[in-house]
Length: 148
Image 1 (cartoon, rainbow, N blue to C red):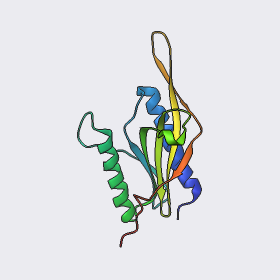
Image 2: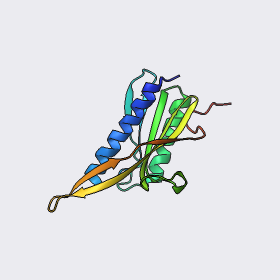
Image 3: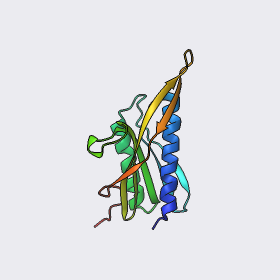
Image 4: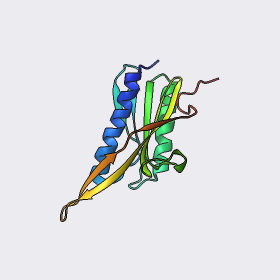
């Protein structure tokens, strides 16, 4: 079982990396992070060979890698991050959001973090990502699924 502070570490990593990507380019492809069986956090990216891949393909590639690794006992917990439109049923403070699928054995949540990108500067455009309070939604486990 993974300690809650390690799940928080995964979430914090994803929020920080998403902020960096949003402020540098205004968007990001799905990415992830994992806590290995040694308790250490590592960043995880996906590449399918295309220069401009379909984000859904990258998400599926990462999800399969995490699922395989969880089944093999390589991961204590994983976080799979995507740039999404937050479903209106959650009444988000902003439509755009970072969604982090945070999962470990016995725990599976989507953590939504609404954000806005603010643009400043007349000649040199500077982007600032402003994040609102995250909220979580329980979801069916997809990555840490007991076999058999």
